[in-house]
Amino acid sequence: MNNFKAALAEKLKLAAAESFPEADLSDVDFKDMFEYPPDPEMGDVALPCFKLAKLFRKAPPLIAGELAKCDYGDSVESVNCAGGYLNFKVSNEYLASSVLKEIEEKGEKFGSNEIGKGKTAVLDYSSPNLAKPFHIGHLGSTVIGHSLKLIHEFCGYKCIGINYIGDLGTQFGKMIAAYKLWGDEKTIEKEGVNATVALYVKFHEEAEKDPSLEDVARSESKKLEDGDPENTEIWKRLVELSLKEYEVTYRQLGITFDSYNGESFYTDKMPEQVEKLRESGLLKIDDGASIVDLSEYGMPPCLILRSDGGTLYPTRDIAAAVYRKKTYGFDKCIYVTSAQQILHFSQWFKVVELMGYDWYKQLVHVPYGTVSIDGKKLATRKGDVVLLRDLFATAIEKVNAVMDEKNPDLENREEVAEAVGVGAVVFHYLFNSRIKDINFNMDAALSFEGNTGPYAQYTYARTCSVLSKAGDFDRASEAVITDKSEADLLKVLSMFPERVETALADYEPSVITRYAIDVCTAFNRFYHNCQILGAEDEKVRSTRLRLTAAAGTVLKSALHLICLKTPEKI
Ligand code: ARG
Image (cartoon, rainbow, N blue to C red; front, top):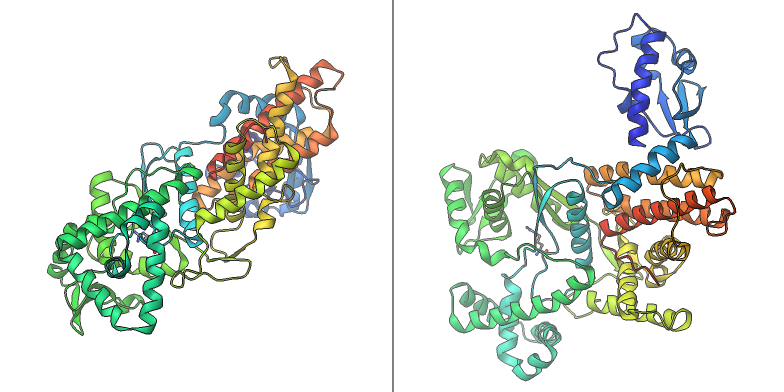
């Protein structure tokens, strides 16, 4: 509706100048004032006249009444006033000639914009702690992060995706200790990361019986930090195994990263920042540790160095941000993590500000809620976790079972089952606003009905199927709209650019997920109400086919923005 609103705003300006010649309209921008009426029967776009009361020296209903008398041209079907609102209905001619044309002309670019033109966004996402299993807790950072990257790209940003892998920390001490005690290269060779996860689990079981193992782990960790060659070799092996494992999941999701510079990459970049902190007098010694006091800002202190001189999570984040600013010259650096890290990010963002880096305002933390599966919270320690890989495998298997029944001879069946199974999980997850805690329900996710990925993908496939049966049709002559469901579909399609802007501004992929459902609902209503292939009138038929194609184009773009693939046949 953006274009409609822009054109209407210009006409309103003329109308207002005519009706209220004494008012100064130079600061009035009608385009920003529009709202959407809660009930579409009232109108498609509304102008609330309350803010104009002062300027026009009249009560809002009177202003609406005056403005309703003006002529708004062919794009407006009707104007009416209700209270202080002026309600406009968009005309079918406008939808057919303008909205449909625009979608056809722009194709897969429809909905995109240039908000980020010439700007760079760095996105730090997924970023799992290696050597631990890649479990459903990582789904959020991975798919919200990737979707935000795609949305930023769609809005003209140049994007750098960084997988800031957790390749340091105490878990490596534990892994190395376990590897030395019980590790068996043959099993590891054969089972890859499964074997190392088993070692990790065993370590925790054994350490419960024999707490001295924790000391062993700490000393292995220290040796690794000091560059011990044997431990470095084992560490490299563990990192490599984990990454290989993650690649399977990333490939299923269609995710690639521009950089895998993880925490260890910043080891030699921290001293400079620590020095800067010290020189500027920000570092305080507290119980032997070096901290930045943030009490003035209502936060606990930010820990920079442990009492043994070891660096900490915030220290690395500060060094990494400085490095990224220098390397990529970002206009935004976005971090996608669970809401449990909100304090961590507020703290070190503040420290960056106090250090005098004026780009601190460009750092953005995007938190999300926790996930449980059918009510169960997830823990890593006991091995009682749902691995992403297994979650996807279960989903794919279930889709396969449905296909056995419904469409056993489908070509590229494996590929399609993967796209639908993985898509179902992602869609189900991205349907909720990110900050909400969600409970994952596999059966609901996989249903072909309701607000699900399979339903959306199936609707897309339906548009493809109609078009493939249609053969050639006339796309050039004037479109004619004869049914309300056609106009309603076009109205929904015309909202895509605005939804993209909202998703970008709010860092909220769920806006797109929900919009995809709006498109599906509108398309399916149209599909059931109107004969498409069988329409008698040639013009009506070609208009309906064009509508089908337009719905397919927009649905495909929307689904791609939330990491879903769009098979043409399901
Ligand atoms: N590895 C961390 C974790 O799994 C997430 C890292 C997020 N990114 C960052 N720059 N701190 O909790």
